Length: 464
Ligand code: PMP
Image (cartoon, rainbow, N blue to C red; front, side):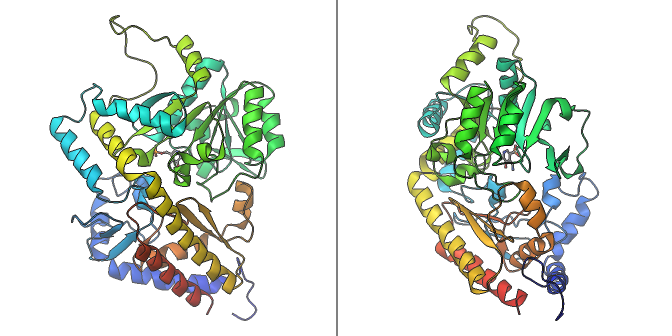
């Protein structure tokens, strides 16, 4: 191993040897989960109810043991292994598991009725709270963030009469056709080799690198872009923060060119109780918030500023309820805004994702990021830890990336996979697609310390 070239500061053969050992360990300690997954091949298209669920690096997903616990982030699998959850359903579980206020709200509303196509008094409270938190005056609920993004795109095209949607390479906004593109070596291609689905991406999408103001200006100047759909800090390729001034340029250029700015806060809500945009003074035309907002019950919301709302009302007038009309508006689903989700949202916004909860969550995330950073510095590894409020990511690259291209060039998938499996084999669960960890109101100091201890153990073995 003496002459071996290091990759990301570590020996590739060491990474491969540790990975092989971790895979054996996983197979031995997750036998019942493995059997359930094998049985699932008989009826599920991808072995489990959703294709996401098979993306865990051990070879099969953990099957959850059905046992109620006190509120928090701990759970057990069917093989009896105990876990501390920092994946939190890739943000869907950002309220933690089993919060009493959410449990109570769901049970109460389920007894009254879950889905009636009627608003409840809770809805009025939720509407007012969305306005107060996010600073946009008009809102609409959907069943998922994907749905909300698609609705915002539809409305943007409707009010601008323009065809294209601009996204940043490396983005993810859910099942949104326009956003399934990326730039590789300057060329546009389908993300992950996705089938284009007969969608004319070359006519309807435009994709540029994040933090590239010149490219943004060039992309918007022709005047054919209906909207920019963006996370204010990218979280789905690796954590890529905006460079100073970039979001100002994004706001200025979209205004100058009459392009709708849609900010997707589905993940960046980790920044604080009212999201990244509010915290940093960015004023979007539309804002999407999903996943966490109903405590993991499928729900999302999109908000519009006053000017955009008026343009929407002009194009799609508000008709008096007494006029019998077709219900088709082209967005929203039957279950959108149903009584169950709204009850959960009220509990989340009033009792779970509160200001004081965020203060604690952000402190805990800081404890984690600080520990990772100290370990990296101690061993002089060319890595860094990134924190976005309650969210932390370990990146195996020396510099904070500016865009997806820099991440693609520096990324070390073998090392990422090893960290996942090593942590999972020792009861620490992180997001399967990248090294992302989220703290929630139910996370405790000892949960973070559990991660930190296993991370140290891993570093010691990796660098031995
Ligand atoms: N927007 C962002 C920023 C996301 O990260 C995701 C999911 N990872 C979505 C939208 C889509 O959310 P959903 O799958 O709940 O529709």
